[in-house]
Length: 523
Image 1: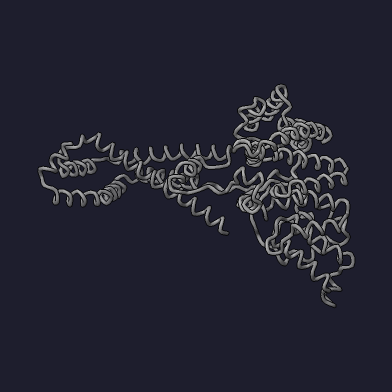
Image 2 (image 1 turned 180 degrees about the horizontal axis):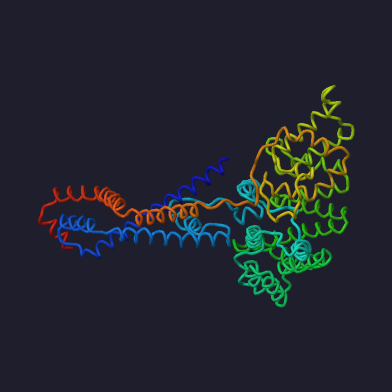
């Protein structure tokens, strides 16, 4: 709630500043127009008199032209804003306000974690930075080339949104690049490759980097996007592991020699962890589940501070496949926190284990007659807790809603997290006899609406510009239909607008000597 309030206040501040800037700019150009037309006389009183005469001589056609021009300009801004929002998922004016106006006002954008906190070091600061993210990387995200592209080949549709892929591009630039990449030609090419929007351009850049050197990140890109099967992806990741381990060992020896070496070591650490995690996922997808579990356990022991990768969620899914429920309970004991649930995977896996103890003999009729036993009460409470954390999951587990391919990023407690969880864990719930029945009997009592991802609301500035365009267009239409009445309203409005200026000018003329005022007006 605090994060949402802070974000709202920051957005409101940007909106107010931008609105005032817009109004004052419009006022400046109006005054400049009047000065140019009237050739401002020497005396202010004469100037105000001339302005009043000018306003009295304006015809309704002028007001029609003025409001029509304002509506046209607002409409053009609206069209550009809508096009930019459809293409990039954000408002252009809001982006400019956040980038240029917020620093002037002393605002700080804390929505994205720094590279230092993301790479390791202080675990508390890392968790604090990562917890402020609006979206999280899906720990079980699929391979683009070997899995997502298969959906495209069959249906002709894109399984990922542009917004989702743009977030992945930002992740790749954060974790796989550093400031010293320009010193190495292959890394410099890959730094540009991660920014490419065209998949073929990214793949071509990766091949170009491999022609210069054994580049681990180039192998990663090819394994993710060019490999058409998991077997091919695993081969490329093994080549990436060989190159990544060499870079990691070299940077580990130099990490204390300066800031740039520390940044390079963090990057090499991120690359190595990512490769090993994806190799473990390849083993899991190819049926070598025990091997995958061992690789995940070793990775968590070797890099215990890199909790933002959520490797334990991969481990939980693999252990459930092995039906190693005691090991699952041991992992939950380490990562589950009753006061602050971490994810749908944690909550619903805990509920599954509690339900497993009673679900095979559970009967709603019998429970209503004799009451719930202690074990049944614990299972119901665990399901309630899970549903309170993410109420979207039960509809997917109970197959009341159709599953789709999970996105690469998820919103905690949202619909996207429910899709990602159910896509991989539905089979584990079906394997436990009666678990889905117990879930169906208990989940509706705790259901409430939470956010849905990736639904995007229209930015404020699109609504503001649309309202401004509609208002000025309505004024132009009314002025054309009722010229005399709207002329009276316009003159009254302008007279009221100029009243404070007239009052100030009169006070200034009464205070300043006439000779000094005469010299100032001449200047």
